[in-house]
Amino acid sequence: MNGTPETTATGRPAHPTTPDEPPVRQDPAVRDEPAVREEPAGREEPAVRGGPTAQDEPSVRDRPAQQDGFAVRDEPVVGPEGGGGGVVDPHRILKSLLGAWALAACSPEETLAVEEHLTDCGSCAEEAVRLRDAVGLLQTERGLDLDPQLRSRVLATCLSRRPPRVPVPAWAQPYDTETARLDALLSDIDPGEWHAPVQLRWFEEERQVRRKATVASVIGHLMTVDGLVAAALGLDDPLDAAGDGDPTSRTETYWLSARQPPTLTVRGPWREQSHTLLRTVSFAGGGAAELDVSYGAFTLPLEDALLERAFECWVHADDIARAVDYPYEPPTGAHLHKLIDLAARLLPGTLAARRRAGLAAPAQSLVTAGSPGRTLHLEVEGPGGGDWWIPLDSPAAVGSADRKVAHIALDGVEFCQLAAGHVSPQEAAAGQLGDRAAVRDVLFAAASLSRL
Image 1 (cartoon, rainbow, N blue to C red):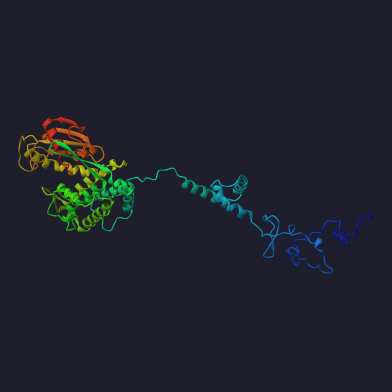
Image 2: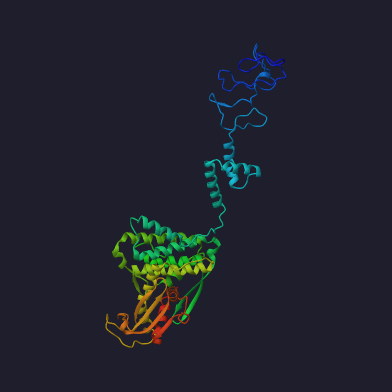
């Protein structure tokens, strides 16, 4: 047609176009044509004679990005505004925003961009879920106070999977547990609470006795009486008075000999002493259970002595917990049963001692040692409970259901509180049947097991 430029067979103009025509785009597939580099502003590249001018060269934005000589056709390319910067991957930009997105710290535009990206990118979606879970852990509303029984549960789980090479004897485990629970309580109280007033209570003859102490002085008392067990095992006595075996007099000596009132520094020596006792009995073997431990007026085999120390440790830990307003649970059912059993086995001897002191009714029918005599049925309910048959007229007699003349039923923790002198015989909520005098004598004998 007239007026149209002459073209070749390929459809391109046969002659150079006029300035009014748009610039000719270079075919990206042509590899042997040199790439156009951007030069700093102010420097003018001389034109190549016979070649196209700068106006004829395609712009940088119109040409595909190249990596290692290959054109990148599928990935979107985002360049910084104003040109002159490197190529930026939008995936990397949005992935870098995931942390801020999880914390809800993105702008609305960024949030929209990230959430649209998550619908298409599986790896970023998985990372977003992990980050949101981590933020949830940082914003927990649970209390920071540890469960006092946490250590016992962790140890029980660990020991059930891998028993220790030198296990603690079963009869020493209540002492191990109660000292550990008390130590956990002490580690959780404030330094100032070591001087908090603690109300100590026990029973003497026919009345309850009270005395004020501090948390630190109670720990010193426990350490001093534990020294009786240490002395029996040939270990160091913290009081250096192994000849004086009465727990009350030892405690009074310790309190009076201290130049200053005990402080939180007593915790270290007490805990080290308990660890040493447990290590010693663990290596001593089975025969150590029968070793005598002197308490002055009476002796106990080592097995019972450590049960008695576990009992007192729990009682005074409860005293401390009440003083500092700290939750504290009774021992486990299995350990509580051992402590109740010890108190029940001590009742006949204590009842006989009260009878000699004129504090209990006279024996009604004496029998030879090992023979069944008049019996009181002690029924303890709840965790650690059971049935015990208490001979009434002679500690050497044998309790028998056939000779039962009285029955007492009460809760296990309440019975322990009675044996600790924290509950008076009159206050014990016991179910009572049969011989009233026998019931009264046994309740008062249980309270008489307590001391400072």
